[in-house]
Length: 166
Image (cartoon, rainbow, N blue to C red; front, side):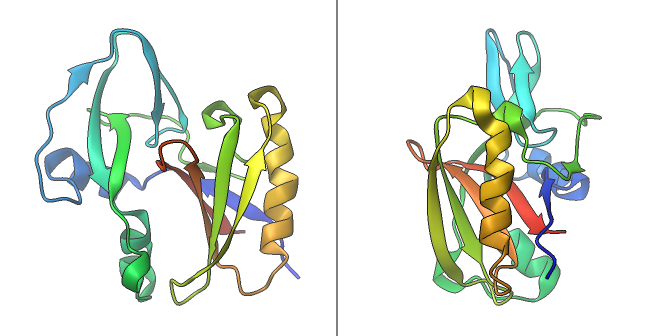
């Protein structure tokens, strides 16, 4: 059974669309990040002071469903994510959980191929031990029904990263 996984940033073509009009149908204004530290979903790292970023509404399950033909039904959610205001050349995917975006409490929401939620796994792993999340993800993907996992911040519910079966 294949239990490898791949962390994925938001696709470049989707980012281009979001920079014009987000998934809530609005054009958003970019800002210069004065302090840095915003979790960027375009390149899976935190922003640096002085970078131009934009906060957009993003519907990750809706986007995945459009790509795969699934129907997210009532699980379709739209929420805020930070992205660079302009195209960037950062990490777009990788075989490991993006430790730089990790916080103390995350929920791993597992979905099947039809876009239905199968459950969630709460993790409370300190940021300095973020590499341990990969073993938890392998456990989630041990269930053959799991097609993808969305990692979300517990406190704000924000979508952090999509993890797909490798």
